[in-house]
Image (tube, rainbow over all chains, first blue to last red; front, top):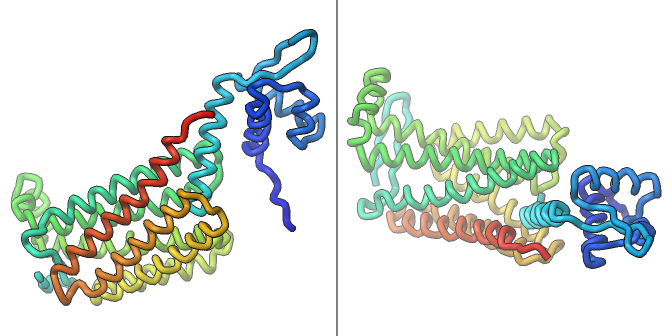
Length: 91
Length: 240
């Protein structure tokens, strides 16, 4: 079976989806496991998401957690719309 | 049926019965609105993702939009000759002295045929997953569009037959896509193109009865309405 490589936007959407599926907050270790990326690559993507204001980093009971922000929700919705449009029209 | 030869051997075509004059233009206007929405959204997708497939899809529907605009201009020139006698019309007339409503109709019909076939051809290329790097194949298909336009101007039935064949291939590809995706929206897209296919079949036989033209136009309207449904459903999607 040929596995198609994920594009940059798809990886970002996968990261955001992982956070959303965990009710909007996730531990870095869980995110690493869910995103299927190397530690270095995940760090790169997380930094981009933090810069773009899609997620935020907070400490909860002394542990680092990532929280989804409104911009992240909006991006994910738009991404899913584009995906649906693309699939429906065979693009 | 009005069928009149004009200079340069270009025939002008009006298939509509008199009582339907203008209604077909409204149907074409609805098709334009649906096409423009698809052009706008797919171009927006291209801007966001930088993926060329969205740009090609946008170009295909832009081509269909131009085709329908040309058809409206061509038919209105006959339906409402007063437009050509208006201030703008007379200035155009002075510039191109031989431009009668029939000339406008004939020229618009060529533009209509060309952009319609080009739009369907691009759609066919997208859905067939043909690689755009394969420029020789694309050049050949473009030549085919020019050829079909040329012959289609003289034998309009051949134009409708060509668009029927293209739509048949597009509909089949969309059916394959639906079988793979199995989404409700993909089903609406198959139905939409299936209906447009039927409308083209009716257009082929339009010379035999004016009522066939009315039916073809109404079926075409239904096709574009169905094309709008998946678009609306995608936008109704609420954040989870």
